[in-house]
Amino acid sequence: MKITTIVGARPQFIKAAPVSSKLRSTSNIQEVLVHTGQHYDENMSDVFFQELEIPSPDYHLGIGSGNHGAQTGRMLEEIEKVLLTEKPDWVLVYGDTNSTLAGALCAAKLHIPIAHVEAGLRSFNRRMPEEINRVLTDHAANILFAPTTAAVENLRNEGILEKKVHLVGDVMYDAAIYYGAIASQKSKVLEYLSLTPQNYILATVHRAENTDNLSRLQAIFSGLTAVAKKIPVVLPLHPRTRAALSRNGLLEEMTHNLQLIEPVGYLDMVMLEKNSLLIATDSGGVQKEAFFYQVPCVTLREETEWVELVQSGWNKLIPPTSEYFVFSGIKNTLNHKPHMQDTVSGLYGGGFASEQIVKLLATES
Ligand code: UD1
Ligand code: UDP
Image: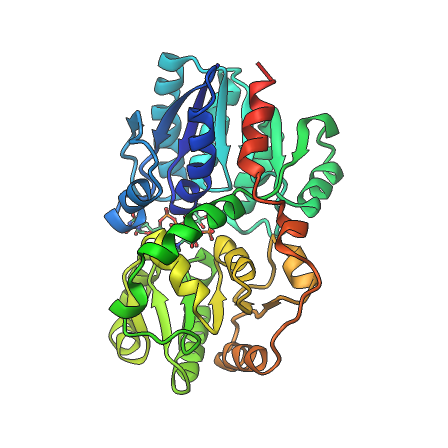
């Protein structure tokens, strides 16, 4: 069976790593890996292939950045060529980026069955590009691997046939277990950044709704600056956010107030997460990793796809509409640390999501 995997953005390299490793150790499966090139900086792409030992892509499409239509359109054109050449039995896509949608759409038009990992997540906010990408991909997919019971419920509510949907758990938890142990042995990031465990806050910001809206961008960065007067705030800066700060003349001031660093590799990120006192983020993946490592989390958004973490009280949603909200949201969470009955395995599976995905795909031939 030939499976063409399509990835392109940072979180997809992390999600694909454990699945790809299982695919390649299954005798009757051949994986052809396609990197769209949506993310291309060394620290947004190559570092993950090296650290997570993902094989070099068979096709690197070099699409790069652009407006949604232009970027997705270029992907469609190039992925179609690959699929026409390779004629795979399945196309495997991850998450909700433009690379996900382009892969799914191309496959659908060529009548190639689509497998979607991380199916069924919803923010119910159609202004998010990711929400459109997820909904369209789920409705085009032939087999849907849902990470949570909430995701299964969302798919049921949208009328997707139950027999297509499989609750397998979260592949990011598989990655956290396997690579998390390696991170503890290999990463020297705390020494390198002169950080003391439990004595800093880790933040990440990259969502378009936060970076492309000046008032929200200012609220987040002023709020983090207020926090940094009490405890260091370390922030690996996504290139979108660096560009937004620079465009608005805020970069120099924030470099002074916060410990802004370049995006880090996964192993260093895990170490930064594990040892932080609190995580403030608008990232989907980082919200869950906070829970995996039992670090309190403040999510700088109005809504989240990982609703179980909010319902159980681990994660606090703080809409970043003012400096005060951001500052007080972090301060209150530090003062009232969450307690949780639910276990990671209870919410996200036991770390066997990749294994289940590959087993199910292998029996679909
Ligand atoms: C994309 C995904 C988002 C995901 C995020 C993970 C979509 C619509 N969005 O958002 O769901 O959470 O990836 O990080 O697919 N840039 C660089 N170098 C790079 C990559 C990007 O400089 O290697 C800059 C460019 O200026 C680019 C901007 O970042 O225009 C945004 O990149 P893009 O891939 O379009 O979206 P993300 O914000 O990264
Ligand atoms: N991550 C990383 N280095 C960084 C920032 C994030 O390795 O500097 C990892 C993080 O640990 C998580 C994933 O990237 O596994 C999340 O990706 P991102 O926040 O870009 O996207 P999202 O999950 O929001 O789609």
